[in-house]
Length: 439
Image 1 (tube, rainbow, N blue to C red):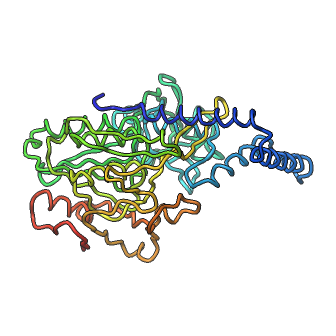
Image 2: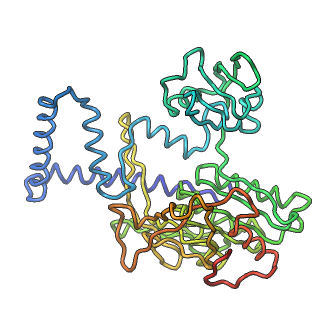
Image 3: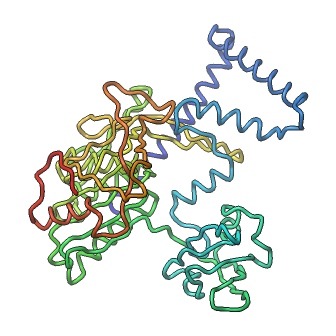
């Protein structure tokens, strides 16, 4: 794929493993030093406490759970984003980052009245849609086993499985007197991280990036090319890149997406604990929008990888960033596998925009502040949250700032941030770059 870069995460993972090995070797060789003597004294204390819990606690504890909780406590005490991943959590994370899995292709929730699985929507062109599953259907059993008593996560895990394997759903549908069975064969389901459409009678191209998984860059390129080839695409005046409520994801995908809109210059700088861990990612020639104007939308739910993209395009003045202050997560987490024991997610670096700005606990400040009015039921209830409000977050020099509202209305005509972007790109009367409140 053009401009695709997976090397960074591999590099970071190897760096983390090498660092861990170095620490282990130093500990073994110089265990008589003062610092390491103190470490071993603390490990002896942990062992004493563990044995006392195992022998004297009122109920027999689960040894594995005790150790996993202790490890997670150690990591989570470092910062809000470092954590231990159990084997199951590690597998779930890999599914999310790959953006594809063997399954049926339905969005589901737990029906609170019946405790059955409720179909929110079947995904187009998936086995569920082709089999005729409909929104609001209730699934009461899987392969004859009742769902009652399972959590939503357990039911979803049962519906996923190897490609080309069948599963029989017992379905309850409004308008039918009796439940009926539906046999569906699992297939590869791809999580669509990018959705696109045109606005203003085809004059504005709109792309919504909801996450940064392994499919994001390729999906973005494909959908932008499709809009350009479409009949209406010939009159596209500009593009809106909607990063609102995008929690982030893979760093290499943030780099690739930024590169899609840039011809040259730095995209992101990462600085680790040691000088040799400093890295810089640069753009290469090629702009998928052919230089058309871009507006990037951000809000308090835009974090991590989405802030990298917004910051890179803002620093290079390639786009106008519109909305409210982003979340402010400016750190890099490396996933370090532990074999059959899962993995650890460890904060290993901080990242900076091309101009050297740290986003950590500060966020991206938009070029144009456009606040979204809240509906009456949310007024006074929604509390803006950002990295700076998280306990144990990495501290930074200078003033920290909490994020902003993450509310986005479903109705396009009520979306003041989107409407501002459309008007700006159509060259209609719109506020100049600065601080503005749209009503």
